[in-house]
Length: 465
Image (cartoon, rainbow, N blue to C red; front, side):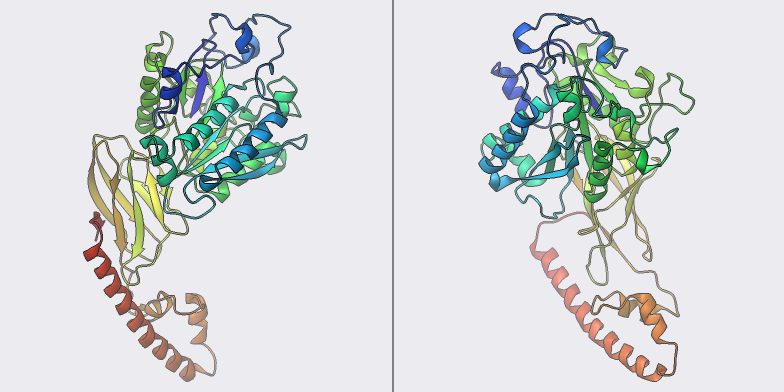
């Protein structure tokens, strides 16, 4: 979801982190238009249907668009200083470089930064357009607020202990330093991503900043994302374009959830929901102004749900495990009536499915080689935890073979075991398999005993059996 900041002097409230409520209440945070640095800002209006800031009337054409904001060198220094000051809950890393060689620095915030955990991961991107620098400042303020208020404020503590938050303050440092919308090659990065309708899949046609975001998204299984823009006061949700390029409402499969998340954001802002141009302060991108090659269509295809800031308790989450060994089973989660599949994380097979609260849902877990299972849930305001325990599919000829292969006792996979049945040493292989099968049976009994003991002693969680 794109979050657009208006030319009005505003405080941008983020609903899941009371950081901006805190800042606004103390008068310590304002958002300014790209062409209007704090020291000369005045009351202006904006052309809501235009996403290009160049189409607006400037207050003073001689104004330096970077004046009043951190330079790229200052931003890098601020990021590294944050990493040292808040080293217990953060790590600093780069996802690549811009056209002109500027590192794309990311701040990860978590109680276990850099480690795999069964927790949702979120990413925030600022300064996609070079002439929209407000986002880079806001994201640095957000990071510092979390660090300053960890173990003091419940929202900051929740973020650190229950999520992995990845913040990229500036995706387009070259455009910022060059005082223009595009990157170092003067390419609009928000039109450079693969598009479901018209863009080709030629990776070499992507700008380095675009490729860096795509590779980043492939490496980390993000649950949700948001990018901050300038130019209008609205929360914009997908899709951003239509198949025939008409300006129409073009809904994505999770349209209801996106509208809910956008509304949560808009209502948390002190006047966004009062917009005369955008009912409720939200808009479908294609209905507002169709564009193609924007950032979040890629995120949707990668099972990432771009949205405004929200508490990580909206929807259903849990894990998929095997009934015979208790091991994680990477698979997929689907919701009946929603044409979209969410994949689990690879390490812990955990899933975090965003849904609109106050409704009944039928949730299905699927893993190749296992029997799918479905459960009905009624989702309240708080998140619901549902773990799925799946049984292996049993066939007469492969039952013994599956029992041996699924036990994780050795390094041979199923196909290598099948190859053992061929050749002159069938008898020796058969004896070896029987011995391994017996050992695996003992191993599985031990695992089941431990699981039953843990379920008896630990907190109760809904389990789909």
